[in-house]
Length: 339
Ligand code: GLA
Image 1 (spheres, rainbow, N blue to C red):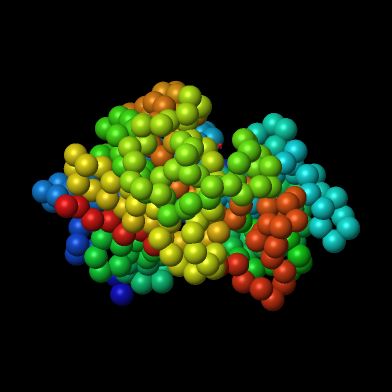
Image 2 (cartoon, rainbow, N blue to C red):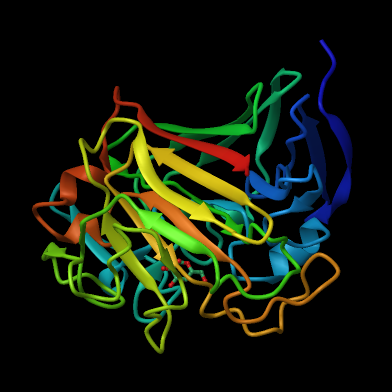
């Protein structure tokens, strides 16, 4: 069986990072690297068949290591924030690294996005990365075995499956941190993209949710009907967790994103309780991307995941606990079209 195409992607701590590219007959092409199990490039045709790279990213593994935007990466062990970098489990107190002081963000100082994963080929259009996160890594208890599989479908579909098991009770909340710009990663702002979120509620409180759940109705966060992102944009931009409608563990629509100029759209489905919609507010033109620099709102993230700080909110805590003999399973489906 032919394997995906591979090329060197630079050296990290004496180990080679590799870039793999898979393509299908419908014209969808995805490049992924073992550094952070990251999607670096995603070529999608527009309504005239013209392809553009619709994800922000960097040109080499060392450049990925040097930035903290989490471009296209697999974020873990726990994505999003943990209040004041602290939690309790089985009567023990744990202190994590405050990567977004005073809070813990996206797994800590060297989260899973900065790790070199082991590559396993599944087949021509499917690739699996594996990573063993040792006990006490970044302060978390338990050894966790994580895996991410990227699988191109027959049509304009990309499936992402994230799994994890543990040898001791711990926390797991993996997220894919892709930045979308359906007009092309180097085309400027996404504020004219139209977004629908299948979420009628959100978790108020910035940056740490208060623990309440509130309706999005009559707030700028109401994307239940398709809306231009720039229309009600708060001064700080969007960076909130939405409660995805429907049963939390079932694969269901999360978001529909459309660029009217190219006609490209993305329907994102997942089996997670929440989605963090982040409008690229911290991009400030200083990060060298793929032959360009990314200014504010050059891309947006739709991070399907458990709720932020869930471990410290009794009603949400169960979402992020993983016990031995259980398997964490996070499934995402990205369906593109151009019309
Ligand atoms: C998430 C967070 C944001 C920010 C980005 C990365 O979306 O919620 O606050 O940290 O990741 O910059």
